[in-house]
Amino acid sequence: MRRLALGSLVALGLSIVVPAQEKDATFEVASVKANKSGEGGGNLRGAPGGRVMATNMPVRPIITFAYQLAQYQLVGGPAWLQTDRYDLIAKMDGTADATPAAPGATAPSPMQLALRHLLEDRFKLRVHHETREIDIYALVMAKPGGSPGPGLRPTTVDCAALIDAATRQPGPPPPNQPFCGIGLGPGRLRFGGLQASAFAQAFTGPAGRMVVDRTGLTGGWDFELTFAPENRSGPPGADAAPVDPNAPSFFTAIQEQLGLKLEPTKGPVDVLVIDSVEKPTED
Image 1 (cartoon, rainbow, N blue to C red):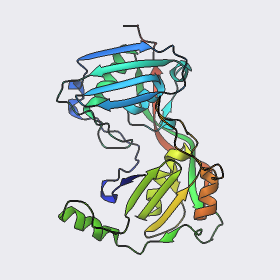
Image 2: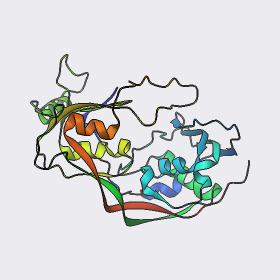
Image 3: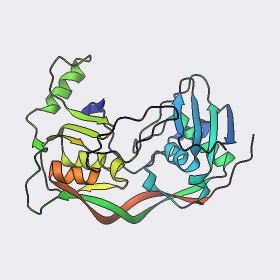
Image 4: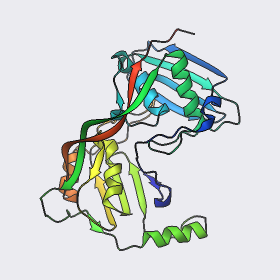
């Protein structure tokens, strides 16, 4: 399970700030080729030396990666953006940072900016931002006025004090330090000392829609949620993580373990609209 310290959490906001140096972020060399293998898996990643590599990837997730979007924030475009697959290799200056910024981060990495330019150049991608009323989820109590479920407990740890101490004295945490932050793993979410608004944001990924907190819960909370992940596939050649055949769905787990539920509703969301896009010319 991957652990994120509370102080380093990135709120899954929806605004995108483009730095002034965007025009300078370009790849020195780039190759784009159609992948006709017929395989289902794909892989997209940044690599040291200012490189980005995509293998057997549809264009739609490449766009959301470049623009730091959740999938539901990308609107429009032809069907081939999801069905046609491509191999992409591109390289920036050797000193460029290839670490991708997370969805909602205030600024993209140089590599993501360069990838936007590549999409504009090779795929003739043209986009614009707007706010639309779309389907979202409201995180609410499973029973109006009800109590939290058996797995949702008020925290007994002052996580703010622990984070402040860690900031003053960097280094590995001491043995048996209480857990603060988020632990992420296939079919598992662990939270320590976070408010309901924070885990509503983290539920956005598994839910597939933006999630807003309407529980009315206050203060910090601890829980460990286990569920059957919807997407069990990984990169080509990777072994899939073992899944408990009796594990509940994500939506059922929230209700049974936390006493909460995701209620369909609509709300304003900042989206990226595809105005036009073309299939690229082969290298």
